[in-house]
Image (spheres, rainbow, N blue to C red):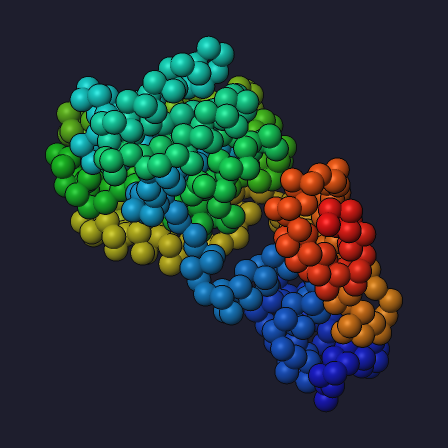
Length: 468
């Protein structure tokens, strides 16, 4: 059996005695989903993850994903925050900060949400300022006007005006809230070490990182659309076919980005806005034409919308090859397997929500072959991500744990933490003696001296003795 106090003590011996069954387990395509050989299957799940790290580090990320889902819940795996979900939690003194990533553009999202709430540029309640040189006065005037009228302000590229942000913007956030509680402040910035701490602490942060895995990318790509969107078109069934295929295409080309130069020769900022724009083009085209102009759609999608980002000629060939596969007449034929491996083309009269469930149920979390990438490329990427994951955990542990000899007692550990905190305290300010000061501050000095003696064991008492 396995001893829980020393769980891995017998592992080297068992490896020598039963090498065949261990080799068979280690060579499985997904060993994290299979039980460990023999009695080792009784190990707690966290220990099983550690065994997997030793044998198959390329599968560690998937094992950790399953561990988090089982113990913390699926909501920590499928995080899908949007501006609409954050708006009810915001307040005049609680701005929303968009942390920009390549390809992210919050302007359209703010405009759409503002329109739903009756906030427009035309009625003077929506102010959008791109920060930069000589824009201080414009931004300040927008904030003052919006506070009075209950408007919305979007300040873009906060990292371009750090000094102004630390001064006027910080004071504007911290001052008393306006009488009109409809006032909202939205900020956008690239990650920058010089961003004011006061601004960061008061904001709700919203980041649009690229999801990990084909399934997660497809989930995000399908979000902007609903059944109502398709019913407004004259040919909803054909539009569903084109949009669903577009979502799959978008997910595939975005997933290739994580493979670096083996995915694309350059890193391109493909965005959700590109997908929505292509869907709108298809909407307008099918609204006006009975027959689907596949060639025209492929040209617009591949050479103008997505192709506008692509600069490398070989990457353009790759993009065109994907579009030839996904945007074609066979998409409307039943029984074809064009979207996902093993998934036949659905009936396009099916409601959109059911189509989404069908796609997510069949979309693999990992499928390098579906991306046209060799399996060995995935192995190298997974090993790198596993190393980075444990390196981050190790750095966090080292930063939060003082170095102590083995077998240190609880008191010694507590004392080390106290010493570390005392080292971080600023240098005390020694004030010159004054009769007026002595009269008013003597009681406080005595209390401070007593507190310092209690906390520091008398180590801080000398810093306050001169004040009394």
